[in-house]
Length: 198
Image 1 (cartoon, rainbow, N blue to C red):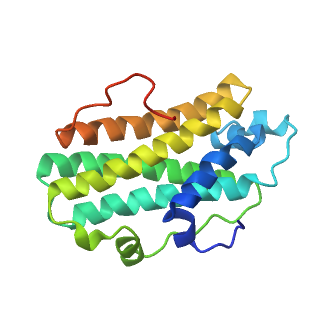
Image 2 (image 1 turned 90 degrees about the vertical axis):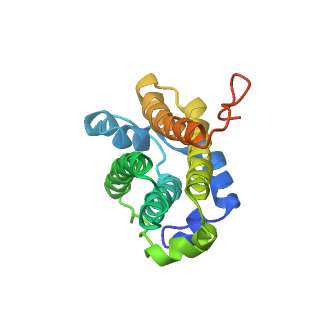
Image 3 (image 1 turned 120 degrees about the vertical axis):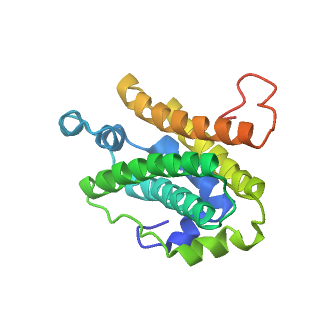
């Protein structure tokens, strides 16, 4: 993968998601420190950041996808007011993640992957099939679960507790989103412990 890959290829295929999960283990401590906003800490570190931009761009592609999925849901006319309010709040969380990723990619000297047009996300996510509030929530829940597992995958590779905390906080946001959406759909929570990140 390279920095100039079309955004659609970064977000829409399960292979890209699996690549992020596998590739996450190669994310350098320098990149995670920058992602955490710990620029001073990053300056004192040594590490190979050559693959970091590609890995972070896949994460950024996932955040672009989530932001636009929530936008599609909000614009669908299918969401009731309380659900709309939560969707807008979750979209705000993803915008915060996006901004942190963009800043980190730029600090590493990379070019952040561009956000596609809303109609491109609509096509990639098959938004035309959304016919009810449940359909919108189901789409969002699937995306949130994928993001949860992707962010959890990078934690084991991080030796520094502060750096692992950044990835854990991102995963916690996604897990919260998934849990709320699952509850709103009236579905049971996962029956067993240790359900995420497997």
